[in-house]
Length: 446
Image (cartoon, rainbow, N blue to C red; front, side, top):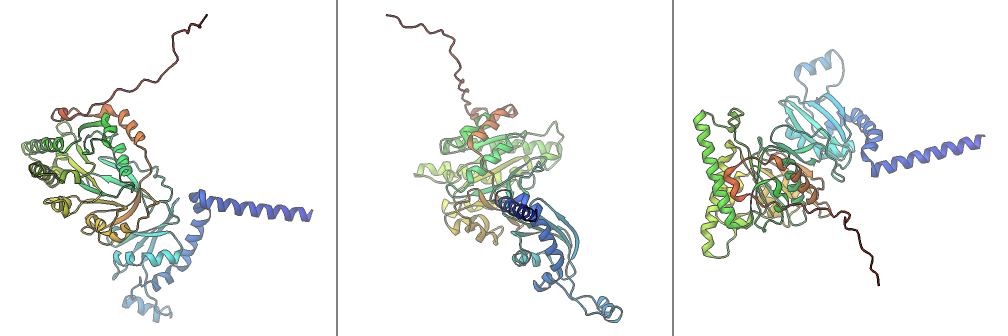
């Protein structure tokens, strides 16, 4: 009987260890919740003061505190680390809210994030300022970008779409009210098209007008024709369409002036024009020319894009520009246009200079991270904005057929936009599914 009990205990222990090993690889959320979270929480609690001290994240105590320690408590004066206000476990990591003492700033913790990551044995540590004097350490227990699962609560309101997953386990949201103009760069097979599919898939469900500019004869955007209000597939059509959008922008400014407001969202709901999202698939095709006679068209396109990028935010017209490379070598106006595109998303690129084009002027620290994105992880990118903050993200895989199906489902949301009717793409009729024949076959006889 004793031998049987020993065998059962050993078998149970081996089965439990095997289950944990399986969960660590194939169900990391389960493994983190059962094993990783308690271990990391305990390690953080027991080593917090020592870790902060050796990482240089402490300050000397005040004179009053030092006096009380020496004369009242009769203890050694200890350096003061940030005070832990709140600790909360999540399905992907650990969130710690800290109150910074006088003499420390969030940049100090950002600089020490790699040391904190190794000290507490987590996958990554991200520092976010929640309010003056308070920061949140977002520790991620495992690589959440290896298998992307969007958070269930990622349902923002307004003109915002959750597009990708951040490295800290939160959703990367493309909010056009906060960042109206954006630039997305990436080499072939880097996931740039998948990022755009997720964006279109989310925007198709919102009451907005979608305008596509795809000079590759529409091979990318033609699948979304059911939801597009306009589509230009050649540089000539793009120039004409952009002129129409500039005219629409000017008429909307007249409407704002008439009602004495400076922003479209200050108008009453009944008078507010529909927002317009302009999706440019490959911006280089709008800049490149093959002969001198194309220079006039190029000037029209560049001038219209710059005007829209500079002023159209106030009237609800937003630019989403994509390309493989976007530098001064494209010609006059390229650098000026890029400076107006506040949001930046850079996927894997072919050279460091392209990463610098997208990130160096807004988040210099992110250039190296974008240069090290591996080819075997398509969809991984670095997202940044003019605030200097940046994060590594990855887009969930979405096929072209899935995005096209959502566009057909919400085709009824295409707004009434007479100015764009001449550019409305042709929507092919659905091919009927072959069914059983109703003709009774006649047997062949001699």
